[in-house]
Amino acid sequence: MRLLPVWTVPAALVLAALLPGAAAAAETPGAAGFTIGDPRIKESSGLAASRTHPGVYWTHNDSDDGPYVYAVDSATGRTVARITLTGIGTPRDVEAISLGPDGQLYVGDIGDNRGGTWDHVWIYRFPEPKELADATVKAEQFTVTYDGGPRDAESLMVHPVTGRVYIASKNQQGGGLYEGPERLSADGKNVFRRIEDVPWVTDGAFSPDGTRLTLRGYLTARTWPWKDGRPEGEGERVDAPWQGQAESVTYAPDGRTLMFGAEGASSRVVAVPVATAGDAPKGSAPAPARSGGGPAPSAGAPAGGDGGGAYGKGVLVLAGATVLALGAKRLVRRRQKG
Image (cartoon, rainbow, N blue to C red; front, top):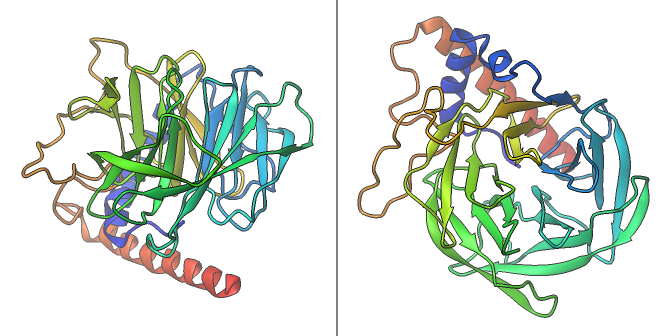
C-alpha cells in the first residue's frame, strides 16, 4: 500500500501533538486491546474476529510475505496458527480479510500500488480451521473485475447475513462501494458494481448482526446504518484512534466493540466501544452534505482547508519534516523491492 497522502499528514500530526492522550483515551478500561507480538507480522493490513475461537483475530501482511494468514490470540498477542494457502497464484497486494456467514474466511488480494491499473484482482476463500495449529489449506480463488474499470482498494466486507461480498475502493477524491454478485463464481470473472460513494478508506467491517457498516481511513472512521443492501444517510463519526499507518478495523464478536489495527512491527490493536442506540458518539458531527452526487469527504483526510488551520508553525514544521522522512523511507523501500 502507498504512504499517507502528503495533505493528510499535517492534520494527523496536529492531532497527535495537541492531544497526546487521544490514543490512550480510546483504550477504555477493560477493553480487549492487544499488541501483535509475532515479528513476522510487520504489515498487518486486515483484521477479522473468529467466531469459532473466542478471543482470536485473523490477520495477514500487506505484501511481500506469501500466502499466509495468521491467527492471533488477543489475550497474549501471540500467533496461535499460521495458515498457508495453496491452490492460488502468488499473492500480489493482500489488503483485507472478512469472515462470512458460511464460516469461511475471505481474503482480499485487492490492492493496487500501481494506482488502479490491474485489469483484475482476486479473492481467496477457505474454511475457518476448527483447530488452531499451523496448517496448509487449499483455498478457492475468485477473479474480480469492476464495472467501470480497475480500482485501487483496501477494504473487503462480507455481509454476515446475506454472505454478499463488498469492496470499497480508495481514491483521493473519494472512493466507491462496490457490490459483488449474489454468489461468487470460481469460473470466469466476478463483476463488482458501484452502488454508493464513500470516503477515502483503508478498511471496513459489518457489525455481527449486519445492521451497521463501519469504514475507516487514516484519521477517522464512520458508521452507517445498513438497510436494503445500502448504507443509509451520511453516517456517524467514530472515535477512531490515531495509529499512523491505520489499516484495519473489525467488530468484536459481541458487536459492542470496534477493533482498530495498524501496520508496523508490534502494532497495537485498539478497542473502541460502540455507541449504543440514541447515544451521541464523542466528537460526532454531521457529515457535510454532498452536492451534485459528488463523493463524501474523505474518512482519512481533513474535512476542509489545508489541515493546518491556526496551529503554530512548530507543529507544521514537524509535519513537513515527518513528510520528508516518511517519503524517503518509502522511496528506499520501493527501490529495494525493485
